[in-house]
Structure formats: structure tokens, C-alpha cells
Length: 124
Image (spheres, rainbow, N blue to C red):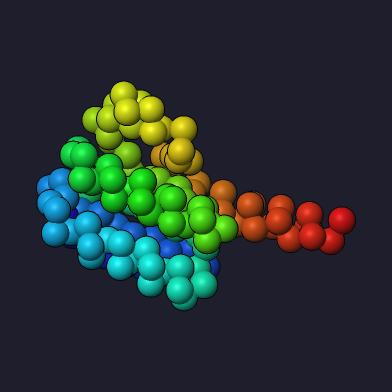
């Protein structure tokens, strides 16, 4: 599985592409998550459009990203989730852990709304 990073304003987008992950890729992915958190980033969008299905290792990577970001006070969303991946998330009962969006624009807008809401809550 190949992962490419893009930064869109204050959101880190990780584009996943290719076959389901193998064991060696877990270390690389955890390093991505650590780096993002150490940079002070708290908004992560995982783009799965380049991945048709996931295995247990891939699922573990996605969940570890969610857990790491949540512990750091951040938020994670998924976009480009195929029907197969939706089924895996549903069957494993991990679906509710994630905000899933149909398009990248919707996900980015959601992060903006969350940030605006947090800012207005601070001033109340």
C-alpha cells in the first residue's frame, strides 16, 4: 500500500493507494501518524479512493490513526470509501468510529465547521 501526504490548509490528507497493507507497512504508517501529531496537526483525512478493499492489517492501520489522533485531541475522517470497505467497517463494528464523507470537499468543509464551532464555543 502506498501512502502520499498532502496538506490542505490545516488538514493533513493521506492518500492510500494499492493493495491491502502488509505487516512491514504498519511501522511506516505509525510513523506518519506520529509525525503529523508532533507537527501539531489535529485534523486528518484518510482518502481511501485508491484502495478497493482492506485486510485486517489495513483496518488496524486506519484504527491506529484514529486512536492516535483522538488521544492527541484531534479528528479523523474517511473519504473515498468503497462499498467493500464500508462492509468491512460495518461487519467489524468499527464503522461508528469514523466520520465518512462522499467527497473530499465535504470532509474538508466538515473540518472547517468543527473548527469554527470550537472557536465560537471558546468565546461563549
